[in-house]
Length: 199
Ligand code: HEM
Image (cartoon, rainbow, N blue to C red; front, side, top):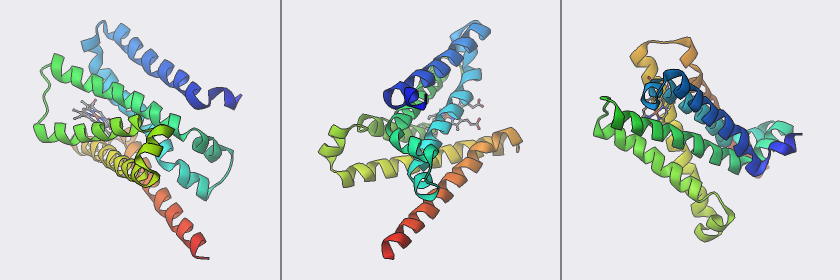
C-alpha cells in the first residue's frame, strides 16, 4: 500500500491537496484575487511540512532507523520536489498579491525572499542523477546544504516575524518550534555520526 505512494507518485496526493485547496478557496471567495488572503499562509504551511521531512530525513534515519525514516530516505528527492512545487505556488500567489492588490513589500524583503526562491529553483533543477554527476557530489551537497539552511532560516524568520507582528498566537507557534526541532535533530545526528566514525 505504502509503495503505491512512493517516488514520482508522491506528487499525486500533494498536487490534489494543493490545487484542490486553492480551487476550493477561489470558489468560496468568488474570485482569484478574493481568495489570495486565504491561500498564502496555508500554502506556506503545507510547503513547510514537506520541507521539514526532506530536511530531517537523513538525521531521523541515523537517530531512529525504522520504516518511517526509511520511507523518507527512499523518497527524499520527491519530498523535496513536492516542497518545491508547493512553495512555487506560494511564490505565484505572493506575486499575484503584489501585482493585483494594493499590497506592497520593500526591496530588501523581496531580495531576501527572492534568494530563497533562487536556491529553491537551483535545488529543484539539480535534483536528478545527471546533475549530481555533472556538479560532482561535493559541490552538489554544498549547494543543497547551503540552500536548505537558508530556506530553514527564512521559514524561522517569517514565522517569528508574524508572531511578533500579530502577538503570540499558539496556533502559529508550530513552525518556529519545528524549525528548532529540525535543527536540533540535524546537530545531534551529525555529532552521533562523528562519534561513530571516531570509534
Ligand atoms: C519575497 C517573497 C515573499 C513574500 C512577499 C511573502 C509573502 C507572504 C505573505 C503575504 C504571507 C501571508 C501572511 C498572512 O496571511 O498574513 C506569507 C506567509 C508565509 N510565508 Fe511567504 N512570502 C515570501 C517568500 C517566502 C519564503 C521564501 C518563505 C520560506 C522559505 C516563506 C514562508 C512563509 C511562511 C512560513 C508563511 C506563513 C507565516 C505564518 O502564517 O506564520 N515565504 N508570505
